[in-house]
Image (cartoon, rainbow, N blue to C red; front, side, top):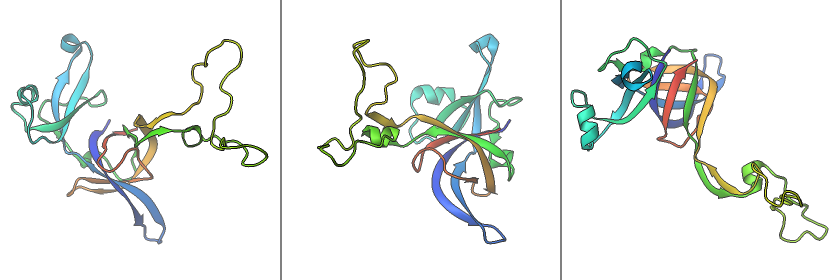
Length: 199
């Protein structure tokens, strides 16, 4: 299984030979460095820790952890990599054009939103005596059990959650600049850290 960390650059489009346009998201993917191999005997579970990005001023714990490696900004664990050892580097060459992948990242934070934007409510009618209630949620309960039920769709903070987009296809790979062009939209804003994994 192939796994990389990357940074979302933004969206663009690619034209194929027939002139058909494909919307793509560009990701600066890797290179990542294997920083630790976790084992069941020592850590209680098996995983591979990888690092991505350059850290300008690493703190002392991170400096000690990465003492024989270059300073890395982000450390993440995965259970999909096997047969790796500390210090190994992975880049976009672990993927091929046409591979189907899943990408995980934190979605854009949209702040406190009402039920129309957050849950797609239609709101109240705009006429016939409805005054200042156009975007209200309406009734939220009944007599019994005298409290708001769990899971009730109400206003609240929207976005800023971990999202996984599955079934995405790699359209193009630029090995010199460590770029992946993935068909479709990906979670997060420009600069969001993404986890890319082959399905």
